[in-house]
Length: 435
Image 1 (cartoon, one colour):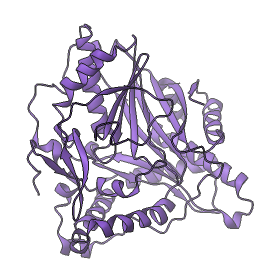
Image 2: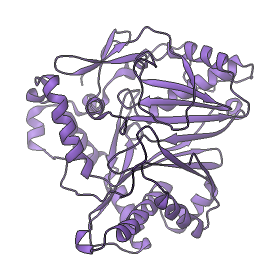
Image 3: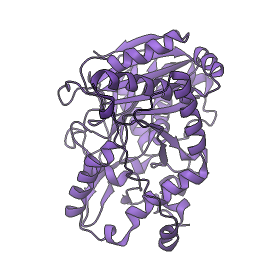
């Protein structure tokens, strides 16, 4: 297996998943995502600033700026002191390099909320969540709350494990070009032409958010009744809403496109990893037209698809394929000035056709009991996607699950259909929105 770069380095390579993001970032597709903590008391910005300064040093691989080399982008250590900022009405806005001193993350506050927004260039939801937990824990400690770390939050005085900066995509594939030729599966861009919601786009820089707060007990009950996991249930409801909207927006069944929802898989749940970089893949249940079954049949399909594909063997095929693209000798030695436009074109023409939406479930988030006493809710918001125009972030905490839709089109037809289905199935839902 390949080893990582030294932890205390002046620069870091982009991991396998991160390499695409510099090519596609824009005001519409910011590549940012958010994890926010709502506390019981209003935030003191000065204490939050100190907590950020104390915490950021433990994560040097996040205190970086994006740079452009001859052949690849890379991350260079940013020696400036990061700052906290007052939050804005629209989450996941593009990060201004000058305003944010070149950092690829933001720490924001509003009333009793602390939000951390991350560029996918640096990490996935796991890394951002661990960073956010460390900042909030340190904030509570400095604010005088008697918080005790039970080991579920990073110890700021602990040594940095070299595994934290591993690109575990490469480490686990142990890339061998000859082996990849024998087992080649072009999983990166398939032949799917997925349906995308139609509608008037909201102005760039805005992002419509609807959050449903649902008792976990309700979702567990509904899932048990349908012999499914919560993720399988939510994915099927998401797909059903997209199917109904396509029927409404596309007149002729002959013109229907596939309905496909990306479901990220945290590979750390399947493979031993300490990586704080991106280490996630996707399974993408896909219904081809004109086969639009009733909900029970749809859920049965989603359940079987996710269980069949959320396994090491099919996921490793995808991982090997993805790594082989970045490690290909021709691609590696193609100048960045040529590489970026090519990647952007492929991503916006072929990659954008692959899915109708994304549903990412962080699972049940656990905090030290003394910290949990001060944290009321945790919300995950995925960044805007100008192609599918819809995303869904899910986070479970204590007795509730926060399910947040982000949308780039006017109106909230998909959200209404989704939550109405859950209510019809017996869920009690409290809605919040920035509309």
